Amino acid sequence: MLLFKIIPYFLCTTIMPTKNLRIREKTIFDGVFSKYILKFLFSLWFKMAGWKLCKVTPEGAGITIAAPHTSNWDFVYALGAAILQDVKIYFSIKDSICRVPILGRWLMFLGAMPIDRSPTGSGQVDQIKQFIETQKGKRVFFLFTPEGTRGGVAKWKTGFYHVAQGCGLPIFLAKVDYLSKETGVFHIFKLTESKDDDIQAMQASYKSVYGKYPTKQFPPYQGRMPKIGDKEAAIIRALYTINSIKGVATKMEISAKAKMGEISSNMFDFLIEKGLVEQGFLDRSEITYRLTLAGKGCYLHLYSKGNSFALPNG
Image (cartoon, rainbow, N blue to C red; front, side, top):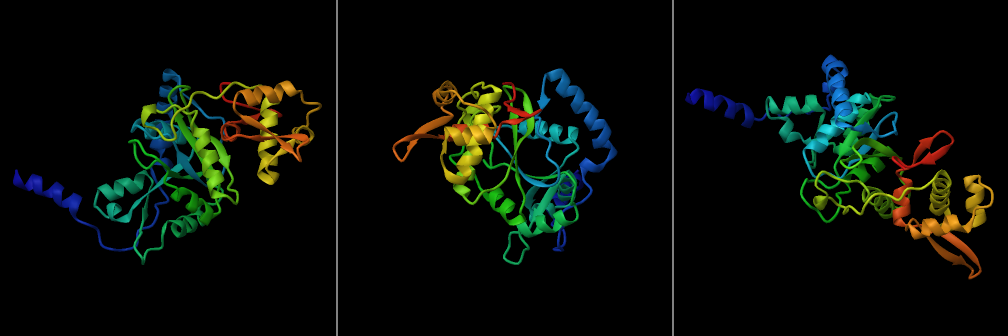
């Protein structure tokens, strides 16, 4: 009996030789089990439980953040979305854990990226860069949870942003919304020159996502996004583009960018009332507009619908 207790302990505590560990190319996402059996099971489960996938389907590689993260079920729904959309997921983990026999091999089979954070290690950015060179054109998501834990936090960990910056990759914004029962990527975020503005915009988009335990999520849940029509969505999209260049926009500039005719003041009043747009003045004469943080968050949930843009469930 003693022998049976010692062997598992030995297997779980003995560290593998200190050779360089590499990200595994073949994972659970490549086998027949994932492509056929798990896909069938998740498809059946999602259909019976009323869950659906987000309408954005990114191509190629990207740094993916999943929020809010308040339950272990988040990973299950995210895994289901990845398998149903033929996406490979990788997640970073200390290389010392991946050196534990059996456990380490199993984690790497699931998509763990062994990261050597020692001074002599190649680092997360370099490892991902090298791996991407072998995966060009493939749908590979490098997954991060900015909250870092299922418990309550007061801020995001922003390591994912530096990895995206260093690798020259977009950030895929993913969610598991337990109110709308929707999971997957809802926006492909391209970095600007301002990290603070980017982080604030991304966080604003998650304020309308309902986690499993909303009291634990950060940023705090603030309710569903207001329902808007195609024209209002076009205004928000135009404002987001113009604001990123010059900060504010006049009604004429918005009309031209949105390819709309005369825009009624009622539309702007409606967007201002909903807290999505704020009004200012240019040279104390002409009225100007810009998106609020809530408006930027709303923009990140817009998806293509024919020649227009709309909100999910809107």
